[in-house]
Image 1 (cartoon, rainbow, N blue to C red):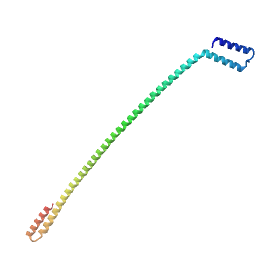
Image 2 (cartoon, helix red, strand yellow; image 1 turned 120 degrees about the vertical axis):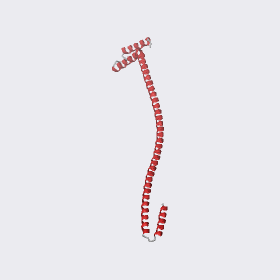
Image 3 (cartoon, rainbow, N blue to C red; image 1 turned 90 degrees about the vertical axis):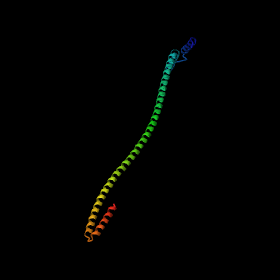
Length: 180
């Protein structure tokens, strides 16, 4: 607005007041004060308000950019963490498979070793049993042989025919010797 229009509006306002076209009451005074406030704000405070709003807009835009960058960094970090976690999970599965194969191999080896040890133990005990049985058999045979020998000697020595008894005794002893 220029000076002529301001002067014209002020003059019309004064004429309206002097002729009592416009009566002053509280509502009119509030309306008049509000109009003056708007006029003063528009003419003198508009650049200050717009510069303040512009600076606030820039500050808000910078904050949004900062938080957007933070969000992007966070998402990038979370994605890399997720990739690392999946890689670690795959490595753990691979290690688990290797350990499982090793454990299976150990179990197989120890089971074979156990079976071999078990067979060796049984074989040693059977050898001891056979040795004891062999000793027992030889002792038993010796005992029986002596008993039979003494029985035959006593039987044939009581016989009256010494020559036939001697031949029969020798034949019996030879026969028993060949039986083993």
